[in-house]
Amino acid sequence: MRLALALALLVTAVAAPLAVASAGERDRAQVALPDRAFSGPGWRFRDVDNFREQFRQDQRRFRRDGDSPVIVVPQVVYVSPGRCWQAGYWNYQWVPQSYSYNAWVPGQWSPDGFWIEGHYEAAWYNSGYYQPVWVEGYWSRC
Image 1: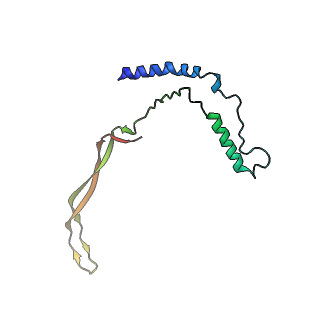
Image 2: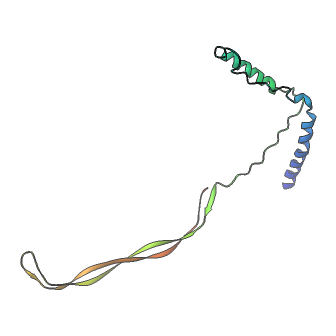
Image 3: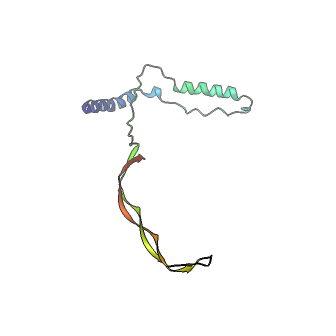
């Protein structure tokens, strides 16, 4: 497959300059034609006719006899992939922790005027820590 592709490319590279050289002087433009779409006095009143004449001149400029071959060489196109790999990385995740413990509540007077003896009451201690976590790589759009 590679040999056939290389051979086709070699034949095209050799044949293209020969075909262009054999076209000769008859295909060259003798005079560069000016853009006449809006030239001359009164173009505002005859703009449709001016555009029509410009179109005819453009068609005459690129018309071919048909006896010489036209060589079309396809262009090589390099396409980058539409997806990119994002590498993995270290991140940190919060790990909450809660502890219950008994807290001593000292004695006190209530709003009704009664004495409340000191006692132990359940309480919570909230804390936590950060642990390292590896985040895997993934594919994303470039």
